[in-house]
Image (cartoon, rainbow, N blue to C red; front, side):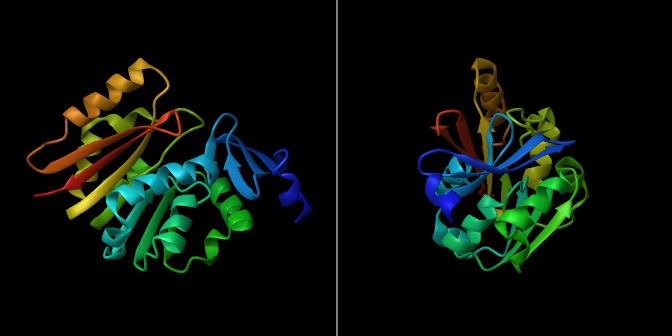
Length: 221
């Protein structure tokens, strides 16, 4: 409790670990809350939770409450899952896919992720999981980073078409991206241009927390 109080004055690091996938993982008390960070960016809670909460509000909490199955690609500490359960009050199934087993261990230890009964965690590569899954989802949240880098496969047409193919009609994709330079702007616009406007509507929410841009896709046909 003392650490929590003093964190309003200065961040207090309580855990640090090297990870093969994420290089460095840190758990820190900051402004009265626990946050999960990599070496250069916020991974869960803190600014990332605000970013994804904004995207979920844009889709609509009432819309999400009516859904049955949500897929989260990139779990990290599970902040968006906590938002879905605690704030949106989503009662359906959540499948979380995370490649870094160390991350899930930390999420369970410090953020009580294992206590969420409706959550199934799968340790797997997101690309491989999306190719293999036979399920259909009402909402797919893509939040995959290796520190400040985003894997190239996320923006490849084959992957985006596969994502859209496992989306139910009137389902949504919420894709969190990072914009650090003009190349990233061009990348995002190319990504949007390759989505069939007859089947999907798209929306971009730029400059969320300075460097993030949210892409929202809705399957309309």
